[in-house]
Length: 398
Image 1 (cartoon, one colour):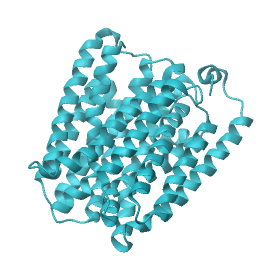
Image 2 (tube, rainbow, N blue to C red; image 1 turned 90 degrees about the horizontal axis):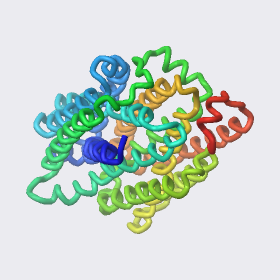
Image 3 (cartoon, rainbow, N blue to C red; image 1 turned 60 degrees about the vertical axis):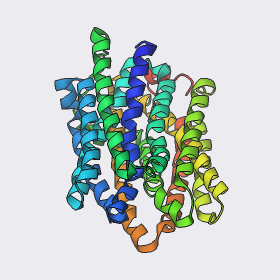
């Protein structure tokens, strides 16, 4: 694609990513409706169900309608989810909105890396995956920051959700514009098969399992930290908007700097260093009780550590097997990511309700330590394993 078409693509990605950013402020919307953190857990449960269910039929939908039309459908599905959260109060609205959100974001998140992988050669994927991660981070990361200020106006927190819903509808229109602009140039070289239990099982039991475990643990920690960040900030009297701004800027600039100057360093050893930064940020949650500057530093460290390492791990997964297996691996990775991403609030919400927000951080720190152990094992295994010749060509500097 030309840079103009990439501009349309990434603009739509930013707008649509705001829908996921809305999950970080769901706790505030539900609080305004008289509900507790348990409401976020209930909604996340159906979100996980919707994401997983739609991932299994993603291949069939793509083969029937085409990727762009399916992604356009996810835009309007997300728009409907956000509208339901605002206008349908109570448990039914929480469950229905969560189901629509999971269906929309699940399909979108699963298909977007597949579409991007089809448009670029393997040696350029790390850079393009990093750029895509930058724009996705901008979308969902800046949503809570802007919501913190917009909600204090006459729009209120409900108005924020309506604005995001409109943005998703605009994103759907941009994807349609992109589809017509591509015309016959739309990439078709890789098949998009339906996800099946057999393909998932074969991917999980393959040598990619350690990398998939990194994605799963990372998604769980990320979701638990951000979904209840508002609760944590208000419990300590801090401004959560500043945290999300610091976190997002660190992730975005970190990814940009990496993709421009340091993309040749994209191996597991780099991931190990970044995971150490992530672990340091989680440790700060355990020791910081009254310092807002240290609170912002926590966001910066986490943005750098997790924000920069995630696209590197995704590129490692995309280049882990032969070209024929790329789609299967990416779809399985997306499924695992979504399951742990939306499952985390469901698991942690009862603990927060019973023992307070600070109770989750020792658990998250332990999980961060597990990630460090796994990546060290991955480094050791990669030094002993002899990959397929095609993979060696595609990895090059990895």
